[in-house]
Image (cartoon, rainbow, N blue to C red; front, side):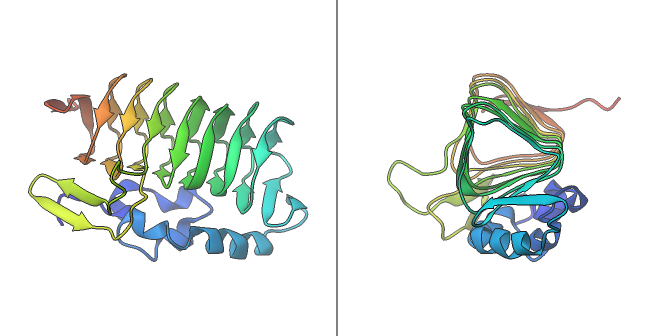
Amino acid sequence: MHNIPTISELYDLSHTIAGEYLKQFTYPWEALKGLNAFIIELGKSLPAEEYDNPKENVWIAKDAKVFASAYIGAPCIIDHGAEVRHCAFIRGGAIIGKNSVFGNSCEIKNSIIFDDAQTPHYNYVGDSILGWHSHMGAGSITSNVKSDRSDIVIKSGRESAETGRYKIGAMLGDYVEVGCNSVLNPGTIIGKHTSVYPLSSVRGVVLENSIYKSADNIVLREER
């Protein structure tokens, strides 16, 4: 599966509280199955002088900013300096990374947001991993279930990987930029330092250091 990016190719694991957990796996979707249990185990080890525990299996760093209208479901960890804005809906199974932004009217479940990542406006993030400094433009979403509910196969050219899961959203590498109102179809993987044009419908693997203009027009970035 040479063309299907691995965790080590997508992410700098020093920029998430889930780094040690992710190191166990080769491909990012493999980490989704045990995420809830991991969050609960990790949360219980977090220092009480740094994290509040407002309800069972929810831990919020004391210096995080969480708007009163946000819903925080369990299990969840909101890390240092994160901002969870007005009417955010955290359904559970979520890690919101250090200094990240989870914005107004956004929804998340069973996902990891790395440090310094942003989903600022009207985003849905389900069964996904968003890398360090990744950014989803307003209205862009991860679609995590196929219409026929069949298991998702990750495809890159002639290569493919059977995942055994029917729910996988998108795996965004570090510094990925997703344009406004784009849809990342189930099982999308976008390599680090890649940009996606607004209003795109993305499927399969997009290699790192690319500019995705359309399915038939993906170009490599020019070296600076």
